[in-house]
Length: 200
Image (cartoon, rainbow, N blue to C red; front, side, top):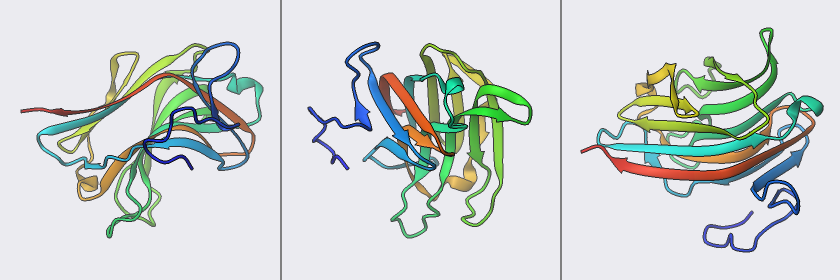
């Protein structure tokens, strides 16, 4: 683990800038549920009425069709696991899936539809086809609403999505590579930014 404020010069086989190709921040792991991620230190609540928190990543999932991994999480919103009312679950994950319900090689938003720790209620919303160049994704939360953009266009089914049920859970962003199945996952970020904006 690399602590906040100690990133300069840090690299290893899981987190690096390649010697060739894109000189982008790269995350690489092998194994089922293996991960290499950045975790936002600042925490916030999705219910804040006068503030919007958003993460924007210009990201490339490297040639997943030629590998063995079937699902990769690359951006997410997670609750703070050491808070007293934590459920230790992500509210939303942006994922690449090799195949889901007959749809192959697409990005998806996986949204937890409640704040129940033991429940398994999720909405899976198609974010479109995989592209072998960087794709810009934005996750935006504020005033109990979730919106997601791809390449600057807000998804019609995730435009003000009601997440009132999540309002008491302290949250933060995460980004990187998180394999949901066995295999090797490689995710690159040309850019990754976080914004907290007042709506007053």
